[in-house]
Length: 265
Picture: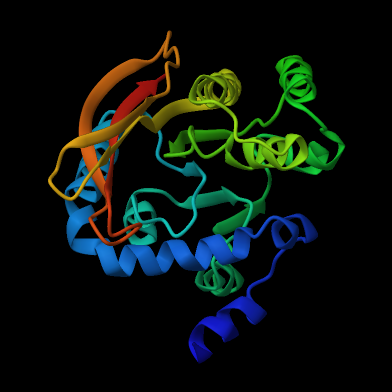
């Protein structure tokens, strides 16, 4: 408890990150990783193997950008450092360890940014229609742009819509239907892909495409899908990620994710 409290107090955060609990979520994610590392290992190996395969024929290996870098579980910092000189990590909250490393290493840059450009507007959204209007407005904006020899998007797609969905549900005082949530998740994911395509350099994306909940007997009790178009990308591989084994998120169910990897030059 003392260690977590110190990390919470010492980690640099923005008002936006504090307001929406990103720092707490970041700390919780690291603890889940420590508890579930054995179950996560196959997923992490797939990510790292594909990273190494993707850079084999990369013409230049000077710079890399990681979108949704978090704790870099998928591609550890030492692996990035072995192959690239300049490393840029992009997220709403960066772990304290990364802040400390960036102070000692001029080749490591931390960019604190909301890649969806929606969070600061959530207080003004009062209903589902206004959220759809915001998504329409974002269609006409350049949400982010990075130039690097390699730009990596790391398991971001289904995460981008979570806070907007929660904000709408609080305002309308009801839970959105699965169909409504799927549409919002898909719209945010499409926005991310559109802007990722516009970045300069080779793109590598790990995308969660399906979530599966299983009961204590292993029977499927819920499946959610994100029907996003990856037109223009080349599919590399797909696999299942045991995100939360039984008793991790709940004593009643486990959570798996179907991950697909794509690249684009």
